[in-house]
Image 1 (cartoon, one colour):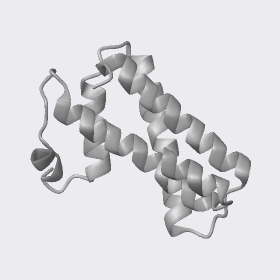
Image 2: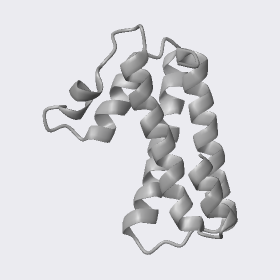
Image 3: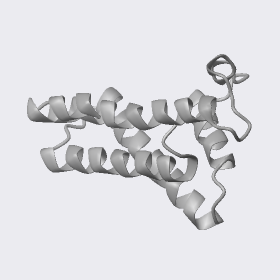
Length: 122
């Protein structure tokens, strides 16, 4: 999240979206490796039998959120929206505005807070 903020401060708005998404993705990976609820080592996370690695990590994270379906679905949708923004920032010609990238950063912070709430501040 620090990297995203540094890029925002330097008006590198589109680049900051990449950092916001990957902060969430890497936190999910860390949480999966560190949780007491059926942990998955980093080595195992990296060998997911051809499945999309990001989708695999998200699905394994969702499987460990002990909350009502609606909460799990909202979390999943928020991650996918952030990922969509990251793909647009990395691979398409979209230029993000300051407000759009700040929104992505805020959403990433909320997602990380949600993970900490459900899994503890591992």
